[in-house]
Image (cartoon, rainbow, N blue to C red; front, side):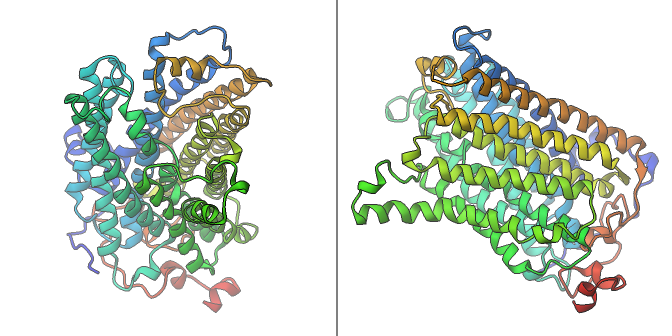
Length: 548
Protein backbone atom coordinates (compact mmCIF):
# COMPACT_ATOMS: atom_id res chain seq x y z
CA UNK A 1 0.00 0.00 0.00
CA UNK A 2 1.37 3.41 -0.98
CA UNK A 3 0.09 6.94 -0.92
CA UNK A 4 0.65 9.20 -3.90
CA UNK A 5 2.89 12.07 -2.90
CA UNK A 6 2.55 15.37 -4.71
CA UNK A 7 3.14 18.94 -3.70
CA UNK A 8 0.12 20.14 -1.74
CA UNK A 9 -1.22 23.55 -2.59
CA UNK A 10 -3.57 25.81 -0.71
CA UNK A 11 -7.22 26.08 -1.60
CA UNK A 12 -7.99 28.23 -4.60
CA UNK A 13 -9.62 31.57 -3.79
CA UNK A 14 -13.26 32.07 -4.56
CA UNK A 15 -12.46 34.42 -7.43
CA UNK A 16 -10.68 31.56 -9.20
CA UNK A 17 -13.88 29.52 -9.42
CA UNK A 18 -14.28 30.11 -13.18
CA UNK A 19 -11.45 28.16 -14.73
CA UNK A 20 -10.61 28.35 -18.39
CA UNK A 21 -12.01 25.82 -20.82
CA UNK A 22 -8.51 24.56 -21.52
CA UNK A 23 -7.92 23.80 -17.85
CA UNK A 24 -11.08 21.76 -17.65
CA UNK A 25 -10.37 19.88 -20.89
CA UNK A 26 -6.84 18.93 -19.80
CA UNK A 27 -7.52 18.42 -16.09
CA UNK A 28 -6.42 15.34 -14.19
CA UNK A 29 -7.79 16.62 -10.88
CA UNK A 30 -10.18 13.93 -9.65
CA UNK A 31 -12.61 16.52 -8.29
CA UNK A 32 -12.96 18.18 -11.68
CA UNK A 33 -13.17 14.87 -13.52
CA UNK A 34 -15.96 13.80 -11.20
CA UNK A 35 -17.87 16.99 -11.86
CA UNK A 36 -17.42 16.54 -15.61
CA UNK A 37 -18.96 13.08 -15.35
CA UNK A 38 -21.81 14.41 -13.21
CA UNK A 39 -22.50 17.35 -15.52
CA UNK A 40 -22.56 15.22 -18.67
CA UNK A 41 -24.72 12.62 -16.92
CA UNK A 42 -27.20 15.28 -15.79
CA UNK A 43 -27.65 16.41 -19.40
CA UNK A 44 -28.04 12.78 -20.49
CA UNK A 45 -30.61 12.18 -17.75
CA UNK A 46 -32.73 15.10 -18.92
CA UNK A 47 -32.69 13.93 -22.55
CA UNK A 48 -33.31 10.29 -21.67
CA UNK A 49 -36.24 11.15 -19.38
CA UNK A 50 -37.87 13.19 -22.15
CA UNK A 51 -37.68 10.17 -24.46
CA UNK A 52 -38.83 7.83 -21.69
CA UNK A 53 -41.90 9.95 -20.92
CA UNK A 54 -42.83 10.13 -24.61
CA UNK A 55 -42.65 6.35 -24.92
CA UNK A 56 -44.73 5.88 -21.76
CA UNK A 57 -47.49 8.18 -22.99
CA UNK A 58 -47.31 6.55 -26.44
CA UNK A 59 -48.36 3.28 -24.82
CA UNK A 60 -51.44 4.79 -23.14
CA UNK A 61 -53.68 4.55 -26.20
CA UNK A 62 -52.89 1.33 -28.02
CA UNK A 63 -55.26 2.11 -30.89
CA UNK A 64 -53.34 5.12 -32.20
CA UNK A 65 -49.78 6.41 -32.22
CA UNK A 66 -48.57 9.99 -32.09
CA UNK A 67 -44.90 9.08 -32.66
CA UNK A 68 -43.62 7.93 -36.04
CA UNK A 69 -43.68 4.14 -35.98
CA UNK A 70 -40.33 4.13 -37.74
CA UNK A 71 -38.74 6.06 -34.88
CA UNK A 72 -39.93 3.77 -32.09
CA UNK A 73 -36.92 1.46 -32.30
CA UNK A 74 -34.51 4.38 -32.12
CA UNK A 75 -36.36 5.97 -29.20
CA UNK A 76 -36.32 2.73 -27.22
CA UNK A 77 -32.60 2.40 -27.96
CA UNK A 78 -31.85 5.94 -26.77
CA UNK A 79 -34.00 5.32 -23.70
CA UNK A 80 -32.20 2.11 -22.74
CA UNK A 81 -28.64 3.03 -23.66
CA UNK A 82 -29.01 6.57 -22.32
CA UNK A 83 -30.27 5.71 -18.84
CA UNK A 84 -27.92 2.74 -18.44
CA UNK A 85 -24.54 3.87 -19.79
CA UNK A 86 -24.98 7.62 -20.02
CA UNK A 87 -26.60 8.05 -16.59
CA UNK A 88 -26.48 5.12 -14.16
CA UNK A 89 -22.84 4.08 -14.26
CA UNK A 90 -21.35 7.51 -15.12
CA UNK A 91 -23.22 9.15 -12.21
CA UNK A 92 -21.82 6.62 -9.76
CA UNK A 93 -18.34 7.04 -11.23
CA UNK A 94 -18.62 10.83 -11.02
CA UNK A 95 -19.48 10.78 -7.33
CA UNK A 96 -16.75 8.25 -6.63
CA UNK A 97 -14.10 10.27 -8.46
CA UNK A 98 -14.82 13.33 -6.34
CA UNK A 99 -15.03 11.55 -3.01
CA UNK A 100 -12.90 8.40 -2.90
CA UNK A 101 -9.37 9.92 -2.98
CA UNK A 102 -10.41 12.33 -0.22
CA UNK A 103 -11.75 9.47 1.89
CA UNK A 104 -8.52 7.54 1.36
CA UNK A 105 -6.39 10.47 2.53
CA UNK A 106 -4.72 10.46 -0.88
CA UNK A 107 -3.48 13.49 -2.77
CA UNK A 108 -4.46 12.15 -6.18
CA UNK A 109 -6.00 9.30 -8.10
CA UNK A 110 -3.86 6.43 -9.22
CA UNK A 111 -3.35 6.83 -12.98
CA UNK A 112 -5.12 10.22 -13.18
CA UNK A 113 -4.42 10.55 -16.91
CA UNK A 114 -6.05 7.16 -17.45
CA UNK A 115 -9.16 8.42 -15.65
CA UNK A 116 -9.17 11.59 -17.76
CA UNK A 117 -8.74 9.57 -20.95
CA UNK A 118 -11.60 7.37 -19.79
CA UNK A 119 -13.94 10.33 -19.43
CA UNK A 120 -13.26 11.72 -22.90
CA UNK A 121 -13.40 8.25 -24.46
CA UNK A 122 -16.77 7.65 -22.81
CA UNK A 123 -18.11 11.05 -23.83
CA UNK A 124 -17.07 10.69 -27.46
CA UNK A 125 -18.44 7.15 -27.64
CA UNK A 126 -21.72 8.13 -25.98
CA UNK A 127 -22.29 11.08 -28.32
CA UNK A 128 -21.44 8.95 -31.37
CA UNK A 129 -23.85 6.24 -30.15
CA UNK A 130 -26.73 8.70 -29.91
CA UNK A 131 -25.87 10.16 -33.32
CA UNK A 132 -25.90 6.65 -34.81
CA UNK A 133 -29.28 5.85 -33.27
CA UNK A 134 -30.80 9.12 -34.46
CA UNK A 135 -29.50 8.39 -37.96
CA UNK A 136 -31.51 5.12 -38.05
CA UNK A 137 -28.63 3.03 -36.79
CA UNK A 138 -28.22 1.23 -33.52
CA UNK A 139 -30.17 -1.89 -32.57
CA UNK A 140 -32.57 -2.86 -35.37
CA UNK A 141 -31.69 0.26 -37.33
CA UNK A 142 -32.26 0.50 -41.06
CA UNK A 143 -29.00 2.21 -42.06
CA UNK A 144 -26.18 -0.37 -42.11
CA UNK A 145 -23.41 2.22 -41.78
CA UNK A 146 -24.93 3.66 -38.64
CA UNK A 147 -25.71 0.23 -37.23
CA UNK A 148 -21.96 -0.39 -37.46
CA UNK A 149 -21.25 3.01 -35.94
CA UNK A 150 -23.47 2.30 -32.95
CA UNK A 151 -21.82 -1.02 -32.11
CA UNK A 152 -18.33 0.49 -32.25
CA UNK A 153 -19.34 3.72 -30.48
CA UNK A 154 -21.12 1.86 -27.70
CA UNK A 155 -18.05 -0.34 -27.24
CA UNK A 156 -15.91 2.82 -27.12
CA UNK A 157 -18.15 4.41 -24.48
CA UNK A 158 -18.04 1.32 -22.29
CA UNK A 159 -14.27 1.07 -22.74
CA UNK A 160 -13.95 4.65 -21.45
CA UNK A 161 -15.94 3.74 -18.35
CA UNK A 162 -13.70 0.72 -17.79
CA UNK A 163 -10.58 2.92 -17.95
CA UNK A 164 -11.92 5.21 -15.24
CA UNK A 165 -13.05 2.26 -13.12
CA UNK A 166 -9.54 0.79 -13.31
CA UNK A 167 -8.17 4.09 -11.98
CA UNK A 168 -10.70 4.10 -9.13
CA UNK A 169 -10.10 0.49 -8.13
CA UNK A 170 -6.33 0.93 -8.24
CA UNK A 171 -6.60 4.06 -6.09
CA UNK A 172 -8.50 2.21 -3.37
CA UNK A 173 -6.08 -0.70 -3.46
CA UNK A 174 -2.82 1.29 -3.54
CA UNK A 175 -3.14 4.95 -2.48
CA UNK A 176 -4.55 4.71 1.05
CA UNK A 177 -3.08 6.87 3.78
CA UNK A 178 -0.74 5.23 6.33
CA UNK A 179 -2.65 3.07 8.78
CA UNK A 180 -5.64 2.54 6.51
CA UNK A 181 -5.73 -1.18 5.86
CA UNK A 182 -8.62 -2.70 3.94
CA UNK A 183 -10.61 -3.17 7.16
CA UNK A 184 -10.44 0.59 7.74
CA UNK A 185 -11.44 1.70 4.25
CA UNK A 186 -14.57 3.91 4.51
CA UNK A 187 -17.76 2.02 3.75
CA UNK A 188 -18.58 4.13 0.68
CA UNK A 189 -15.10 3.64 -0.78
CA UNK A 190 -15.38 -0.10 -0.13
CA UNK A 191 -18.69 -0.25 -2.00
CA UNK A 192 -17.09 1.66 -4.88
CA UNK A 193 -14.27 -0.89 -4.95
CA UNK A 194 -16.75 -3.77 -5.20
CA UNK A 195 -18.67 -1.97 -7.95
CA UNK A 196 -15.47 -1.09 -9.83
CA UNK A 197 -13.97 -4.57 -9.72
CA UNK A 198 -17.20 -6.31 -10.73
CA UNK A 199 -17.87 -3.80 -13.51
CA UNK A 200 -14.31 -4.13 -14.81
CA UNK A 201 -14.95 -7.86 -15.10
CA UNK A 202 -18.46 -7.50 -16.56
CA UNK A 203 -18.17 -4.69 -19.09
CA UNK A 204 -15.39 -6.24 -21.23
CA UNK A 205 -17.80 -9.12 -21.91
CA UNK A 206 -20.32 -6.64 -23.30
CA UNK A 207 -17.60 -4.78 -25.21
CA UNK A 208 -16.29 -8.00 -26.74
CA UNK A 209 -19.73 -9.02 -27.96
CA UNK A 210 -20.36 -5.54 -29.41
CA UNK A 211 -17.12 -5.81 -31.39
CA UNK A 212 -18.06 -9.33 -32.49
CA UNK A 213 -21.49 -8.10 -33.61
CA UNK A 214 -19.78 -5.32 -35.60
CA UNK A 215 -17.48 -7.79 -37.36
CA UNK A 216 -20.40 -10.13 -38.11
CA UNK A 217 -22.52 -7.28 -39.45
CA UNK A 218 -19.64 -6.00 -41.55
CA UNK A 219 -18.83 -9.48 -42.85
CA UNK A 220 -22.16 -11.40 -43.03
CA UNK A 221 -20.48 -14.76 -43.53
CA UNK A 222 -20.74 -15.04 -39.75
CA UNK A 223 -24.47 -15.52 -40.24
CA UNK A 224 -25.34 -16.35 -36.66
CA UNK A 225 -24.41 -12.88 -35.47
CA UNK A 226 -25.11 -10.86 -38.60
CA UNK A 227 -28.05 -8.55 -39.17
CA UNK A 228 -29.25 -5.41 -37.49
CA UNK A 229 -31.04 -7.42 -34.75
CA UNK A 230 -27.86 -8.97 -33.38
CA UNK A 231 -27.43 -6.40 -30.60
CA UNK A 232 -30.83 -7.31 -29.19
CA UNK A 233 -30.12 -11.02 -29.50
CA UNK A 234 -26.59 -11.16 -28.16
CA UNK A 235 -25.86 -8.04 -26.08
CA UNK A 236 -29.14 -7.06 -24.44
CA UNK A 237 -28.05 -8.72 -21.16
CA UNK A 238 -25.58 -5.85 -20.75
CA UNK A 239 -28.39 -3.28 -20.69
CA UNK A 240 -30.62 -4.87 -18.08
CA UNK A 241 -30.42 -6.52 -14.70
CA UNK A 242 -28.69 -8.31 -13.05
CA UNK A 243 -25.84 -6.41 -14.80
CA UNK A 244 -27.29 -3.04 -13.80
CA UNK A 245 -27.55 -4.19 -10.17
CA UNK A 246 -23.76 -3.88 -10.02
CA UNK A 247 -24.05 -0.14 -10.61
CA UNK A 248 -26.24 0.31 -7.52
CA UNK A 249 -23.74 -1.14 -5.01
CA UNK A 250 -22.41 2.32 -3.94
CA UNK A 251 -26.01 3.31 -3.10
CA UNK A 252 -25.88 0.96 -0.12
CA UNK A 253 -22.40 2.16 0.86
CA UNK A 254 -23.65 5.75 0.83
CA UNK A 255 -26.53 4.83 3.14
CA UNK A 256 -24.14 3.34 5.71
CA UNK A 257 -21.86 6.39 5.42
CA UNK A 258 -24.53 9.01 6.07
CA UNK A 259 -26.26 6.97 8.78
CA UNK A 260 -23.01 6.67 10.74
CA UNK A 261 -22.35 10.40 10.37
CA UNK A 262 -25.88 11.44 11.33
CA UNK A 263 -25.99 9.11 14.35
CA UNK A 264 -22.59 10.34 15.63
CA UNK A 265 -21.71 6.71 16.32
CA UNK A 266 -19.29 4.15 15.03
CA UNK A 267 -20.94 1.72 12.65
CA UNK A 268 -20.73 -1.34 14.89
CA UNK A 269 -21.81 -3.97 12.31
CA UNK A 270 -19.05 -2.71 10.01
CA UNK A 271 -17.79 -6.12 8.91
CA UNK A 272 -21.24 -7.46 7.99
CA UNK A 273 -22.03 -4.21 6.11
CA UNK A 274 -18.86 -4.61 4.04
CA UNK A 275 -19.72 -8.26 3.38
CA UNK A 276 -23.25 -7.26 2.34
CA UNK A 277 -21.87 -4.98 -0.38
CA UNK A 278 -19.69 -7.82 -1.62
CA UNK A 279 -22.70 -10.14 -1.77
CA UNK A 280 -24.53 -7.74 -4.08
CA UNK A 281 -21.52 -7.96 -6.36
CA UNK A 282 -22.18 -11.68 -6.91
CA UNK A 283 -24.69 -10.49 -9.54
CA UNK A 284 -21.59 -10.31 -11.76
CA UNK A 285 -21.98 -14.04 -12.43
CA UNK A 286 -25.16 -13.40 -14.41
CA UNK A 287 -23.22 -11.20 -16.81
CA UNK A 288 -20.50 -13.83 -17.13
CA UNK A 289 -23.12 -16.45 -18.04
CA UNK A 290 -24.75 -14.06 -20.57
CA UNK A 291 -28.10 -15.86 -20.45
CA UNK A 292 -30.95 -15.52 -17.94
CA UNK A 293 -30.59 -17.73 -14.88
CA UNK A 294 -34.16 -18.81 -14.15
CA UNK A 295 -36.21 -21.34 -12.28
CA UNK A 296 -38.07 -23.05 -15.08
CA UNK A 297 -41.85 -22.96 -15.36
CA UNK A 298 -43.47 -26.10 -14.00
CA UNK A 299 -40.81 -26.34 -11.32
CA UNK A 300 -42.89 -28.63 -9.10
CA UNK A 301 -43.11 -31.27 -11.80
CA UNK A 302 -39.34 -31.41 -12.34
CA UNK A 303 -37.22 -34.26 -11.03
CA UNK A 304 -35.08 -33.77 -7.96
CA UNK A 305 -31.91 -33.38 -9.99
CA UNK A 306 -33.52 -30.82 -12.31
CA UNK A 307 -34.78 -28.86 -9.33
CA UNK A 308 -31.29 -28.66 -7.89
CA UNK A 309 -29.84 -27.67 -11.28
CA UNK A 310 -32.29 -24.75 -11.33
CA UNK A 311 -32.16 -23.75 -7.68
CA UNK A 312 -28.37 -23.76 -7.21
CA UNK A 313 -27.46 -21.20 -9.91
CA UNK A 314 -30.61 -19.16 -9.12
CA UNK A 315 -29.61 -18.95 -5.47
CA UNK A 316 -26.10 -17.77 -6.35
CA UNK A 317 -27.05 -15.26 -9.07
CA UNK A 318 -30.25 -13.84 -7.58
CA UNK A 319 -30.71 -14.81 -3.93
CA UNK A 320 -27.23 -13.85 -2.71
CA UNK A 321 -27.37 -10.31 -4.22
CA UNK A 322 -30.85 -9.89 -2.73
CA UNK A 323 -29.58 -11.08 0.65
CA UNK A 324 -26.69 -8.63 0.40
CA UNK A 325 -28.96 -5.70 -0.47
CA UNK A 326 -31.35 -6.61 2.34
CA UNK A 327 -28.56 -6.86 4.91
CA UNK A 328 -26.98 -3.60 3.71
CA UNK A 329 -30.26 -1.86 4.55
CA UNK A 330 -31.34 -3.86 7.61
CA UNK A 331 -27.99 -3.61 9.42
CA UNK A 332 -27.95 0.19 9.39
CA UNK A 333 -31.66 0.98 9.83
CA UNK A 334 -31.48 0.67 13.66
CA UNK A 335 -29.05 3.60 13.61
CA UNK A 336 -31.50 5.80 11.69
CA UNK A 337 -33.78 6.20 14.70
CA UNK A 338 -30.88 7.65 16.70
CA UNK A 339 -29.66 9.87 13.88
CA UNK A 340 -30.15 13.59 13.42
CA UNK A 341 -32.48 14.20 10.45
CA UNK A 342 -30.72 15.60 7.39
CA UNK A 343 -31.14 15.74 3.62
CA UNK A 344 -28.35 13.21 2.91
CA UNK A 345 -29.81 10.80 5.47
CA UNK A 346 -33.32 10.98 3.98
CA UNK A 347 -32.08 10.62 0.40
CA UNK A 348 -29.72 7.80 1.35
CA UNK A 349 -32.58 5.82 2.90
CA UNK A 350 -34.90 6.44 -0.05
CA UNK A 351 -32.24 5.51 -2.62
CA UNK A 352 -31.41 2.28 -0.79
CA UNK A 353 -35.08 1.32 -0.55
CA UNK A 354 -35.48 1.79 -4.30
CA UNK A 355 -32.37 -0.27 -4.90
CA UNK A 356 -33.55 -3.04 -2.60
CA UNK A 357 -36.93 -3.10 -4.35
CA UNK A 358 -35.19 -3.35 -7.72
CA UNK A 359 -32.98 -6.27 -6.63
CA UNK A 360 -36.00 -8.09 -5.16
CA UNK A 361 -38.02 -7.56 -8.35
CA UNK A 362 -35.12 -8.89 -10.42
CA UNK A 363 -35.12 -12.10 -8.39
CA UNK A 364 -38.89 -12.45 -8.80
CA UNK A 365 -38.73 -11.87 -12.55
CA UNK A 366 -36.50 -14.89 -13.03
CA UNK A 367 -38.97 -17.36 -11.50
CA UNK A 368 -40.46 -19.10 -14.53
CA UNK A 369 -43.89 -19.77 -13.05
CA UNK A 370 -44.36 -16.01 -12.58
CA UNK A 371 -44.29 -15.70 -16.41
CA UNK A 372 -42.69 -12.25 -16.29
CA UNK A 373 -39.90 -12.68 -18.84
CA UNK A 374 -40.59 -10.57 -21.94
CA UNK A 375 -43.05 -8.28 -20.15
CA UNK A 376 -42.79 -4.72 -18.84
CA UNK A 377 -41.88 -6.19 -15.45
CA UNK A 378 -38.27 -6.07 -16.64
CA UNK A 379 -38.61 -2.39 -17.53
CA UNK A 380 -40.21 -1.60 -14.17
CA UNK A 381 -37.37 -3.33 -12.31
CA UNK A 382 -34.78 -1.48 -14.36
CA UNK A 383 -36.52 1.86 -13.72
CA UNK A 384 -36.43 1.23 -9.97
CA UNK A 385 -32.67 0.65 -10.18
CA UNK A 386 -32.18 3.77 -12.32
CA UNK A 387 -34.26 5.84 -9.88
CA UNK A 388 -32.22 4.50 -6.98
CA UNK A 389 -29.02 5.83 -8.56
CA UNK A 390 -30.60 9.21 -9.37
CA UNK A 391 -31.82 9.73 -5.78
CA UNK A 392 -28.42 8.58 -4.50
CA UNK A 393 -26.70 11.14 -6.74
CA UNK A 394 -28.86 13.91 -5.29
CA UNK A 395 -28.01 12.82 -1.75
CA UNK A 396 -24.31 12.57 -2.58
CA UNK A 397 -24.25 16.06 -4.10
CA UNK A 398 -25.94 17.50 -1.00
CA UNK A 399 -23.54 15.66 1.30
CA UNK A 400 -20.23 16.26 -0.46
CA UNK A 401 -20.84 19.53 -2.34
CA UNK A 402 -18.80 21.53 0.23
CA UNK A 403 -15.71 19.59 -0.78
CA UNK A 404 -15.79 20.81 -4.37
CA UNK A 405 -17.62 24.14 -4.15
CA UNK A 406 -17.10 25.24 -0.56
CA UNK A 407 -20.83 25.93 -0.27
CA UNK A 408 -23.82 24.04 1.07
CA UNK A 409 -27.09 23.29 -0.69
CA UNK A 410 -30.22 24.46 1.16
CA UNK A 411 -31.49 21.44 3.08
CA UNK A 412 -35.26 21.82 2.79
CA UNK A 413 -35.45 22.28 -1.01
CA UNK A 414 -32.94 19.45 -1.49
CA UNK A 415 -34.97 17.12 0.71
CA UNK A 416 -38.18 18.05 -1.07
CA UNK A 417 -36.74 17.51 -4.55
CA UNK A 418 -35.15 14.23 -3.51
CA UNK A 419 -38.40 12.95 -2.03
CA UNK A 420 -40.34 13.93 -5.16
CA UNK A 421 -37.74 12.12 -7.28
CA UNK A 422 -38.27 9.05 -5.10
CA UNK A 423 -42.03 9.32 -5.69
CA UNK A 424 -41.40 9.74 -9.41
CA UNK A 425 -39.24 6.63 -9.43
CA UNK A 426 -41.96 4.62 -7.72
CA UNK A 427 -44.59 5.91 -10.15
CA UNK A 428 -42.31 5.09 -13.08
CA UNK A 429 -41.40 1.58 -11.98
CA UNK A 430 -44.24 0.04 -9.96
CA UNK A 431 -46.98 0.43 -12.64
CA UNK A 432 -44.70 -1.34 -15.11
CA UNK A 433 -44.34 -4.17 -12.59
CA UNK A 434 -48.13 -4.44 -12.33
CA UNK A 435 -48.53 -4.27 -16.11
CA UNK A 436 -45.96 -7.05 -16.38
CA UNK A 437 -48.18 -9.33 -14.33
CA UNK A 438 -50.92 -8.48 -16.84
CA UNK A 439 -48.57 -9.57 -19.67
CA UNK A 440 -48.00 -6.17 -21.25
CA UNK A 441 -45.14 -6.83 -23.70
CA UNK A 442 -41.84 -5.15 -23.01
CA UNK A 443 -38.42 -5.09 -24.61
CA UNK A 444 -34.83 -4.27 -23.86
CA UNK A 445 -34.42 -3.50 -27.54
CA UNK A 446 -37.51 -4.26 -29.71
CA UNK A 447 -36.48 -7.18 -31.87
CA UNK A 448 -38.18 -6.61 -35.24
CA UNK A 449 -40.76 -4.25 -36.69
CA UNK A 450 -43.77 -6.40 -35.70
CA UNK A 451 -42.18 -6.59 -32.26
CA UNK A 452 -41.93 -2.81 -32.15
CA UNK A 453 -45.63 -2.52 -32.83
CA UNK A 454 -46.29 -5.16 -30.21
CA UNK A 455 -44.58 -3.05 -27.58
CA UNK A 456 -46.86 -0.06 -28.22
CA UNK A 457 -49.97 -1.87 -29.52
CA UNK A 458 -51.28 -4.53 -27.17
CA UNK A 459 -54.37 -5.50 -25.25
CA UNK A 460 -55.07 -7.17 -21.93
CA UNK A 461 -57.79 -7.06 -19.32
CA UNK A 462 -57.37 -4.32 -16.77
CA UNK A 463 -56.60 -0.60 -16.89
CA UNK A 464 -53.64 -0.71 -19.28
CA UNK A 465 -53.95 3.01 -19.92
CA UNK A 466 -53.72 3.76 -16.20
CA UNK A 467 -50.43 1.92 -15.68
CA UNK A 468 -48.77 3.66 -18.61
CA UNK A 469 -50.15 7.07 -17.61
CA UNK A 470 -48.72 6.61 -14.12
CA UNK A 471 -45.36 5.63 -15.56
CA UNK A 472 -45.39 8.68 -17.83
CA UNK A 473 -46.30 10.92 -14.88
CA UNK A 474 -43.52 9.41 -12.78
CA UNK A 475 -40.92 9.92 -15.50
CA UNK A 476 -42.16 13.47 -16.10
CA UNK A 477 -41.93 14.19 -12.36
CA UNK A 478 -38.35 12.90 -12.34
CA UNK A 479 -37.58 15.16 -15.29
CA UNK A 480 -38.93 18.23 -13.49
CA UNK A 481 -37.17 17.45 -10.21
CA UNK A 482 -33.90 16.76 -12.03
CA UNK A 483 -34.02 20.15 -13.73
CA UNK A 484 -34.91 21.84 -10.44
CA UNK A 485 -32.12 20.06 -8.57
CA UNK A 486 -29.53 20.99 -11.18
CA UNK A 487 -30.66 24.62 -10.93
CA UNK A 488 -30.50 24.44 -7.12
CA UNK A 489 -26.99 23.01 -7.27
CA UNK A 490 -25.71 25.66 -9.67
CA UNK A 491 -27.27 28.45 -7.65
CA UNK A 492 -25.80 27.08 -4.42
CA UNK A 493 -22.35 26.79 -6.00
CA UNK A 494 -22.49 30.47 -6.97
CA UNK A 495 -24.41 32.07 -4.12
CA UNK A 496 -25.01 29.40 -1.49
CA UNK A 497 -24.09 29.55 2.16
CA UNK A 498 -20.42 28.95 2.77
CA UNK A 499 -19.77 25.59 4.35
CA UNK A 500 -17.27 24.85 7.07
CA UNK A 501 -14.55 22.27 6.65
CA UNK A 502 -16.67 19.70 8.51
CA UNK A 503 -20.31 20.77 8.15
CA UNK A 504 -21.74 17.31 8.95
CA UNK A 505 -19.46 16.49 11.89
CA UNK A 506 -18.12 13.62 9.82
CA UNK A 507 -15.99 10.63 10.66
CA UNK A 508 -13.82 10.10 7.58
CA UNK A 509 -10.84 11.93 6.13
CA UNK A 510 -12.58 14.06 3.50
CA UNK A 511 -13.75 16.26 6.37
CA UNK A 512 -10.17 16.82 7.56
CA UNK A 513 -9.30 19.03 4.61
CA UNK A 514 -10.55 22.57 3.84
CA UNK A 515 -13.77 23.23 1.92
CA UNK A 516 -13.32 23.43 -1.01
CA UNK A 517 -10.51 20.91 -1.01
CA UNK A 518 -7.16 22.13 -2.41
CA UNK A 519 -5.90 20.71 -5.66
CA UNK A 520 -3.68 18.18 -3.86
CA UNK A 521 -6.29 17.48 -1.17
CA UNK A 522 -4.09 17.39 1.93
CA UNK A 523 -1.19 19.55 3.07
CA UNK A 524 0.10 16.61 5.13
CA UNK A 525 -0.68 12.92 5.15
CA UNK A 526 -2.73 11.59 8.03
CA UNK A 527 -1.76 8.47 9.95
CA UNK A 528 -4.93 6.78 11.15
CA UNK A 529 -5.61 4.12 13.76
CA UNK A 530 -9.27 3.28 13.12
CA UNK A 531 -11.99 3.32 10.47
CA UNK A 532 -13.32 6.61 11.92
CA UNK A 533 -10.20 8.77 12.26
CA UNK A 534 -12.03 12.05 12.82
CA UNK A 535 -14.20 10.51 15.51
CA UNK A 536 -11.01 9.58 17.37
CA UNK A 537 -10.05 13.24 17.54
CA UNK A 538 -13.41 14.55 18.75
CA UNK A 539 -14.71 14.67 22.33
CA UNK A 540 -16.47 11.51 23.48
CA UNK A 541 -20.00 12.90 23.74
CA UNK A 542 -21.73 9.52 23.66
CA UNK A 543 -21.11 6.15 25.24
CA UNK A 544 -20.50 4.83 21.75
CA UNK A 545 -17.53 7.12 21.30
CA UNK A 546 -16.08 6.55 24.75
CA UNK A 547 -16.32 2.77 24.42
CA UNK A 548 -14.62 2.71 21.01
